[in-house]
Structure formats: C-alpha cells, structure tokens
Length: 239
Image (tube, rainbow, N blue to C red; front, side):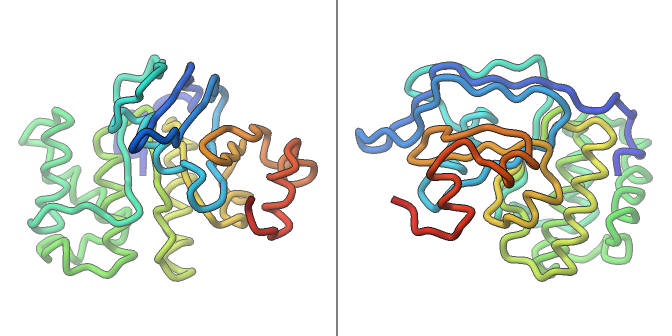
C-alpha cells in the first residue's frame, strides 16, 4: 500500500508521554508517568474493558487534551482509524480524493493515485458506490487506505477489526503489516490476543488507566512482568 507514496525507512518514529493524566467527572481515567514508544513497532495496546486503551490512543494522537502532562514526537503527520469507520457521505472515490487533497496532492495526480489505492485494497470496482453502503470490512479497508493516503508517520488504530469476520480481518492485518514495513509507525488497540501476537513488536498492557507492563511481544506472552497481565492472559476476570 505504501508503495503508492514515497517510501520511507523502516518506522523508527518515537513517541513519548510524560506525566499524562486525563479525568472524566473528576475521576482519573488515564495516569501514565512515562511511556516511550521507540523502535519499529507495531505497538499493540492491550487491557481489559475500561482500562483506558481508547482514551490513551486519543490522547497520544491529540484528539483529547490531557489534564496534565504532554506528548512528544518528531512526527508531523499522524492519522487515526476508529473501530467504527468514519466515512464521508460521498462516493468511495470522493472519500479518497478528499484525503489526498488534504495531504496536498495536486488535482492532476489525485484521481490516478486514488484509483491505485482502491485497486490495492480491492475496492476499485466500487469507486462510484456510496461509501456508507459498503460492507463492514470494505468500509474499514477504505478508512485505512484513506488514512494511509495522507502519508502519516504515525498511524493510530482503535480496534479496526473488532466487528469483522476472519477474512476481512486478515485483509486489514495484511494492510497494516505492509504499511509498517514501508515506514508507518503503527500504534494499535486490540482485544484479540492472537492479533497482538501476529502484528506486534511490543505490547503495552493497561490496567485502570496505568501502564502495568511494556514488553517485547514474545516476552510479554511468555513471562509478563505484571501479575494482572498474567491473569489477563489466563482469562481471569479483571480486578
């Protein structure tokens, strides 16, 4: 997928949170003294329901303003794909054109580049179809290539396959890995442990809005350095 844009080196874009705190109705929902995401990624964010995964992702991306702390990164271009695709009330092709125009691509190049992206995602035959009439898997593929068309240095993904069947999930995972291999730094929330193993270089495990552990993927699944993470992997109910 990233073959369609200028290829960058393997992703090593760093991202760090310092003293990050976020509250809702006076209750602290995210409390992260320090989190550094270095190396290649993808980074997978795991944790039980209510652990603060989506809030943390939105804070890292800048969609939410923290009550304390700061996010630092040299990246100037970021994008995010949500669990439920957010698509414009336009055709599939018009959705791509909008993203490419926002990325500064000239009008003369946009149509061909948009069609090339759609072809790579298996959506070229539906270019004129209303985007919101696509199937769930097709909508998510469109949301993903639309985000990639903006040439992000960091791409945040919030459970992009949670409601998809295995075939659609496999297609999205292949696109994610290809984007990562071409230089996009991936930070992704998932509940799927198998998916975390397949995609992740490292795991951030959240519990009650705090980082319970941050380890390489193989190490995390073999010997998590947090009792609550070990219980989560066993299937214990969270406390």
